[in-house]
Length: 88
Image (cartoon, rainbow, N blue to C red):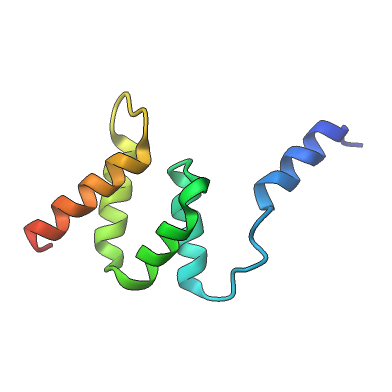
């Protein structure tokens, strides 16, 4: 039998996923989760809809591997801008 705290923390992780009906929405939501930036999940969903997946995945990998990151979302956006400028 699980304790109440673990049940509530599991519910919080899945909360807000009721609006996902398309694959790009799921990808954007997973980006927000990976970057620990759920406050800006709509931004990541918009990026997932319109941007190249290779660019998004490259920026995500860079942000996750970045040492001492205080805001992975900012690092992700910076790297995405750099990759787009390079034309990758």
